[in-house]
Structure formats: structure tokens, C-alpha cells
Image 1 (tube, rainbow, N blue to C red):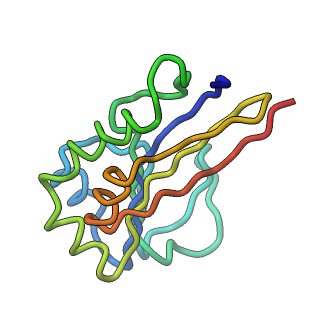
Image 2 (cartoon, rainbow, N blue to C red; image 1 turned 30 degrees about the vertical axis):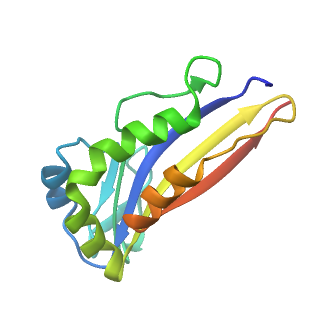
Length: 140
């Protein structure tokens, strides 16, 4: 197996939910959050035009940051995240009715690599209406 690095983030989007409610319900501290209707800002705090059209909440649930595939597989990390999220299935399914639940999986490597997510893990994601988004960073 070729080595690659990756990071996983939970990202939730909804037309109106208060991000504080997401934090309290899931018991996690967000990395980023925005409430629908609030003014927009850059990550450095500069004011942008307009307001957020939807609420947004994101979290690196175990503060894993970038991990090596040799240290921990993506599937193992996804299973750990699912174990934290599954007790909140009613809340996540409610959010999914009007919004979008995702786990962003960003990866980076200087070589070709393969990732396989087993059917059981995919079924658990689907049961919570969570999409898996893979964002690939090309190596140099």
C-alpha cells in the first residue's frame, strides 16, 4: 500500500439551524461555524459582502489533523466518527431533511493510492444520511 496523508471533518449545512445547537447536541467544539443570515467574514476576519445563506458547522472530531495512512486507516477513523455520531441519529436525520450532512475526507500523496471503504461503513454513513466527500490534493 502506498502511503498518503488524510484529514476528516464533519461538515453540516442547514437552512436555519443554530450552530450552537449542533455543538451542544453533538458535544463537540466546531472548527468553523456560521449562522444563516449572519454577516460573512474571511478566515482572517475581514468583512465580506452579504450574509450566510445557510448555517454551517464543521469539526475535526478528534483533533486528528493530517494523519498518515500507515498510522491509522481512513476506515478506522470513519468508524470512530460514526460511533460518536450514531447516538445522535435522530438529530442528524432531522438536519438531513432540509440540509446536508457530510464527512469531508481530504487526502494527499505524491503517488497513486487506493482507498477502500467497506460496505458496512458505507451503510452506517447512509443510515445517518451522511455523504462522504473526497477532496484530493495532488502531490508535487
